Length: 81
Image 1 (cartoon, rainbow, N blue to C red):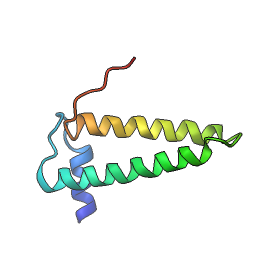
Image 2: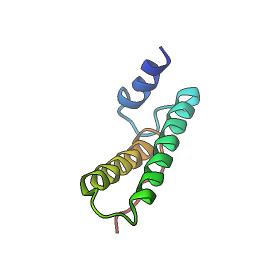
Image 3: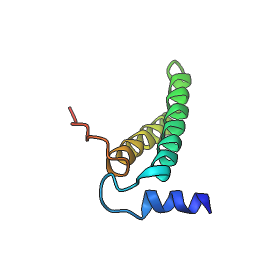
Image 4: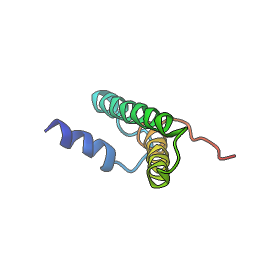
C-alpha cells in the first residue's frame, strides 16, 4: 500500500511541487538514497577503464533524479550551462 501511494505521488501528479506532507518526505528520502548510491558507484568507477554503458546509465539516472526534485518536490530548476 505504501509503495503505491509513493508511486502515485511520483507518477500521478502533473504540477511541480504537488507531492506534499508525508509522501513528499518519503519521495525525498528515496531520491536521496538513490542519489547517494549513484555517487558512490561513480566514485568507484572513476579510476577504472571501461564501464562506459554503466556510467552513461548512472548519469541518466542522476538526470532523472534532478527532474524528480524539480517537478515533484518543487525544487528550483537548475540552469544548464
